[in-house]
Image (cartoon, rainbow over all chains, first blue to last red; front, side, top):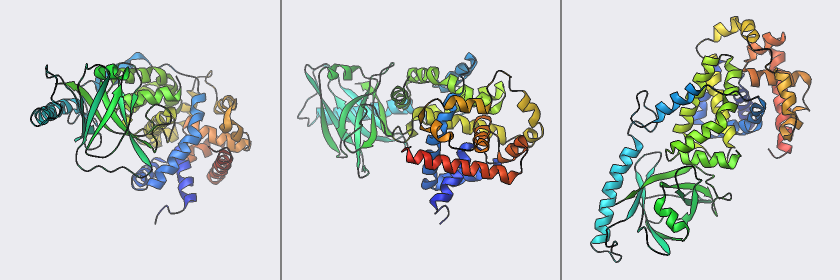
Length: 238
Length: 185
């Protein structure tokens, strides 16, 4: 197997991260990176070792036109090269899907429902999409505005697998400039509930969205997501 | 802004939170622009690198893993890779030939690689480990890291045979690695 020796991987990764490779060698190395996870790990290790050097450079304020250009490119409906999210505008897709699934949930809840929706018919629904496949992977719903606590009903769509030694942690995204807030660990079971007590319950009703990240067993040690976010979705009132 | 706050902002970028992205930019762009300016040695290229890097950060925030790397490490690597690609890919020959001029175009007040290295020596395990390298190892690694020189460019700049420069770098990095390993980094 190529790159079987750890020493070789480390040596190549060091040259790549330091930046001494020629254009040709960089291109070749990047192709190999895609295919060899062990090589990617070696690169990550060297980045961890060397990147702090860059922070010793005196800061240089970029001109404001750089941010303006970036902002114009990330706005939904902007002109230009389509990026990762724009091919099938994530949020537009998400809200259509949310509407459909919300409707389905309402029907589910309304017809045989042991828990009927509140009289005014208001329900919060979040359709969380798998960020890789962009298809709905999980739904979360609850009745907002109730006193005391919220009972979040979670449906995991399809067959999901959790890597051994990891945990799924659900996060509330309050929006604006606030950090995510943990709503606790969840399982891969297709139907489950999470109880959210006050004062978090009131905040939950105002949340912009929810996200699910993969954490070490036992959940995030920092109180913020530390692992990759797998699923995320926007809160929709139905 | 500390690593935890920056991680929090990145995790909100996953949800297309533009406000969080703006805050992330405000707190990291000056550091990252410095890296791009230093390597490309041209403002217009550095601006292009910064713009493309932030688009990349926005689009791939879900790939950021706080358990594996600090947010600034992740973002700096993206900027350096963009800058090195721009520097190497289209005009490698041109840069090789006009190298002296380009080096001369770095403003005088800008600190040299060795001076930067001294500044980095202030604290931390990396600084401590850097001190254990020979002067030549330090200088060649600093020139490569801060100025983005390839092996060939380094050999010319330091007026030494290619093999000698490669050996300095390889041994320097080896020593750095074992020292940092001993520090648990």
